[in-house]
Image (cartoon, rainbow, N blue to C red; front, top):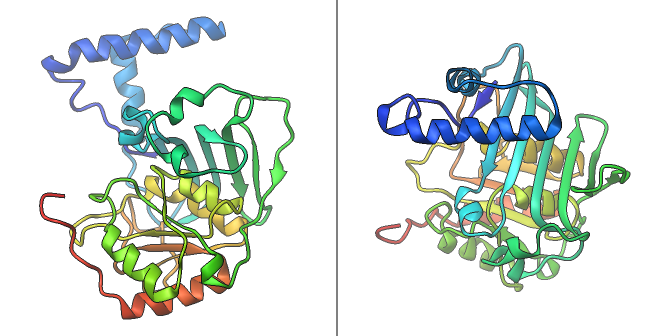
Length: 289
């Protein structure tokens, strides 16, 4: 398993109280589920460190991000629980659990603080999934009896009808670069800003048409931040590449090697976005961000 978290801080004396608290929470869930298992703190540490695989081009690897969009989670906005599976370096399965995401139309307010207050309602909470060559699907997160519905990206070609998504935090992605890209392309609708891989889910079901991400040049993108969403968008008919047009390569270990950033969109718009990217240099992030 390739996972974001490790147990290093929890193994320090200062992390002991947090480790005890985590162990209590895990055991409370086990007790509620009546699985008959009680873990010790040391067993919890070992389980966390099962995610230390380096991945790579051979074999099968699960890729886990237990809370993608940590700032969104803390800010009671959007976040996702993300699980993908690599087979010989190719993402073949992906699942996104999005507890705060509406099942219907999504607006700007759904990416802001307060989105979590609507969680738990019958029309909030989405589960996206995809199996390579078998399509992408969405279902209500909290209804275990609901049948998944096959989803497709909105196959737009007119940029004036398209809405693009980007990260809420400008430190994660240059808003000035995405704005320049949108202007070059002719996008007129305002951006939809969302935390986490929720953006891949929204793109795959046609709630928006473009996702762009341009992190600082020194930032290294991790595979767990994109694996699940990548296969879901591709199976929904979209394209996900770097800004140079190269398909994302998950066979190189824990990090992606990218030309500038990530662009995801339906095929017709994606082609236009690559042309725009060739004309727009990645702008530096504002000082201190």
